[in-house]
Image (cartoon, rainbow, N blue to C red; front, side):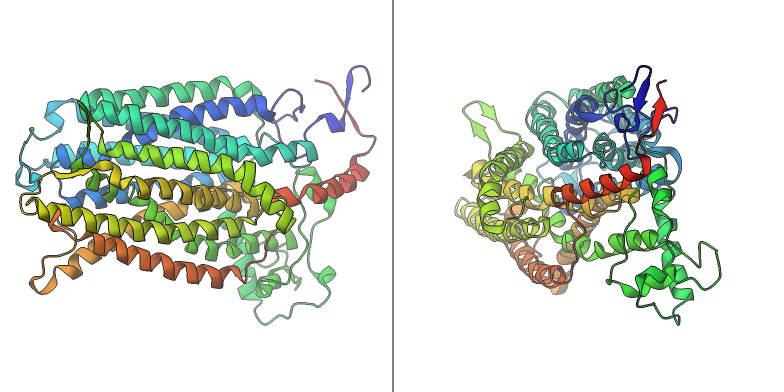
Length: 593
């Protein structure tokens, strides 16, 4: 350090800048100081989101008078949209506005949707009159105006989350310099803290907010999440002076399309055996942009044709090796994405059929009635406990056996979770069979009355769902972020959300299809508005079989997956890259601002 001057190593080396586009000092921006605002934001935002989603099926049933299949499908269709819109948000962030401004604009839309939703549940003119019929399908239906306002608010909210979900966690990860081994190691614990913040917000929503909605009123029950979201946005904005930012690097979809088109246009051109003959930019070009250069790999060899120089300099005819390898990385993850669709479908049951089951059981503890949706808190608690046990004991034990810094690979962690999902649906099927037998014994099948069983008989399926999530969901988020190339991290993050979106739509498809098929030829059907006369046990058994088949597919797919260097394994790689870059930028100094 010289007086009035700062050596290059005091600045971030990954291309991070402030909002004005100037390089940033590591000591002034980023790190855990910046991430603290983001973690607190996530607590309030998750409280807002799960304050709506956890109990939505009961609002649709009790207030909008929708039947089991209609209400369940409306929840999963909305949730599916919630989790798919991040693809658009990732595109806008990477290609146009950058992560920060995409997030800010989307947050305003998100807050508007929450405000409209609170109005729709509060004003009597925006919902049908109260009805006390046991069969809600006999009550007065919601009018077109009622549905337009309610669903308009819900889907406005969905558009907003499309811009916040893929960018907020990526903004957090951006606060650590990948070219600094010490900061890179700190990023390893970032996702654990991130999920811990999600746990806290979700737990509050599944207990306090759900209770308020069921026992005090929907107006206050929705107003509090809206207020929570407003607070979370303010917290995020307060932290602005401490954030590091990345320039938009262009649309990842365009980059991937260029590689695929270039390879197809040169499909007859052979790939040279010497990879040095392939077109690539100089290392200095990537160093100036704070990017990594990627060496060619033998997988998906056909795409390497895009880097064969045939004399044309068009981006749609010639692509650098790094761009080709980035495309390969994104395409290699698609089979893993497909494998995680079925467990995402299982997650959708927590806020739909599991809640409807709970509503048929005895929920009283003395004079206190447990809201059916509040059992979702046990998913959160189970997940939290399992994450702590996983990091404290399981990883350490497995490190000795496997010599892997993670204990097991991310794919192996997913596989363990998939096995849990098979067990969950088997247990859920037998539990439901027992519930139906008790309903028959007490003569409440036809009238759909309360089954004299404690709601806590459902606890095993909730607790095990949290255990499965500790393996599948966390591994999934880390995997898609870790395996995505640096310039496509937002798109990689959106992969994990895409699986939840498609999983919810798959849940809608399965529920509708099974209901339709089982009601053919005069049969009663497996899923009716009266769950006491239904056969959810058969449906859960079907889901168990689907999970088993998915696990077999998982075993097949993962045999062919080629890992990019994992975060925890890449410290040595980064140190070597840092040495190479030091040779380029050695002795450079920059005047202090």
